[in-house]
Amino acid sequence: MPISNTLKAAAFASIAAMGTFALAAGSPALAHNHKAHSEKSQPNIVEAAQGTGVHGTLVAAVQAAGLVDTLSSPGPFTVFAPTDDAFSALPAGTVDTLLQPANKGQLSTILTYHVVAGRVPAAALSQAIRNNGGSYSFETVAGENLTASFDGHTIVITDGAGRESKVTMADVKTTNGVIHVTDGVFLPG
Image (cartoon, rainbow, N blue to C red; front, side, top):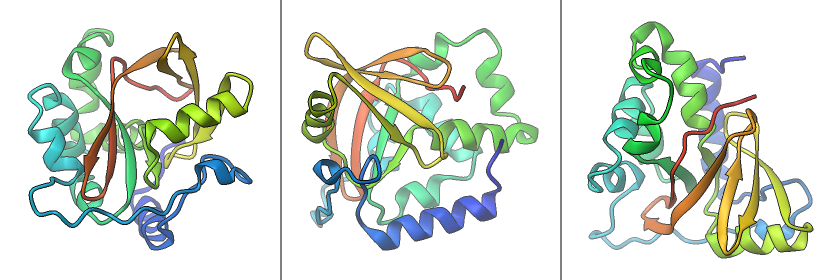
């Protein structure tokens, strides 16, 4: 069920005001309240994605969904950022269809499915996986769950559709959170 932009804006404002996040209720291992870095040389999440050269589709989608201001706000947020190759692996026409103005709500839901409130470094996520017997489920800003596990030493995220994506680069620090680059796009179940 798509989340209205008004509700989403209220949720983001509420999350930003909290400043902390536990990936699941009662999980103090992942409750982090890190100060955002104030170094002017460090980009915010949107600026970092714009500068990689491999997140053009993600940036275009964030712009089309009207989420630039939200993901540029103080946050903090953790973003699982699919590469252009990850978007290219979706069925033909999927990205073009999602970028159409008529599909803004669906696009926004998919994008917020890649966002977790708070700053969740890979070490904390890895520890949660180990503490929970090798698999850890957590809620995204979209209100849907993702599940983290390991493939060797690599963190793998399984979405609601059962698709697995690897974290190919972890802990890209930004002024308003952290980015974990993924080789797949998450789709709700």
